[in-house]
Image (tube, one colour):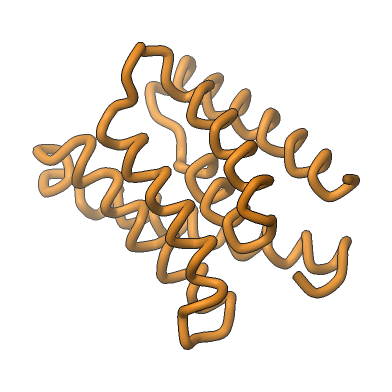
Length: 146
């Protein structure tokens, strides 16, 4: 229960930080996406679904989810299944899903910007991947092998 509560509080913190950065700077790194993908590697299916539903609900205030939120939900499911079916170590699978998933999110959400600003998008994807590694390592340090 402590692990789930700490993940929930971390998600609220990252959502708040992301929304404030977007408000002030017009852009925020995709740390929330990296966090939600990482939760797929750490938690059970139901815990991942609850955390993911909350995160996606906060990110989307429209009646129907946008394409990018459907991609993010699919990435979370892929991360959850990936810990069982991917032939790599968990951190390699997490890195691949986070890096490629962040690029896919931009390609789906902003296809015109994706090509024009690829170097910044690639930097954002790299930062999100490093953040995902940090979160996985932190949860492993605090709660043992996950």
